Length: 130
Image (cartoon, rainbow, N blue to C red):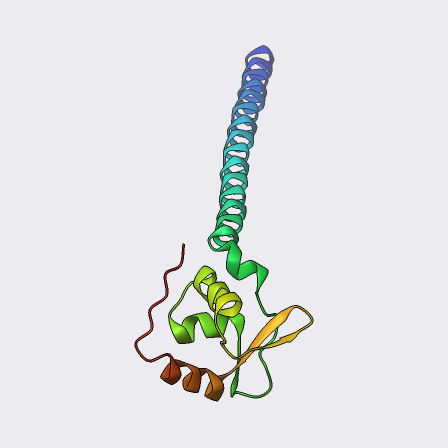
């Protein structure tokens, strides 16, 4: 009877050890898969943020980190939206027309009232931008 009891204890202990081994391997495998998924998500977010930043490099060059205190003055990006033009077109206006602007530390500011008057003075002129 003692031998049977020892054998059953031995088998029970062996089953417990083998079961623990399989459970720990399963947990490690699941953790590794989740880590890979999180790493892939992190990489995807980083790539997406980079691509969004590269969508319009022209805007990046003229990006204003602040808004002017005077709401009657527009930044480069605000002027693009106000006029409904691209950065290339706004650069053309700066270089080829008499669009009113102020340049401070390589940043362009545009007085809104002067822009409105400039637009009225343009009349029916058309510009071709290559």
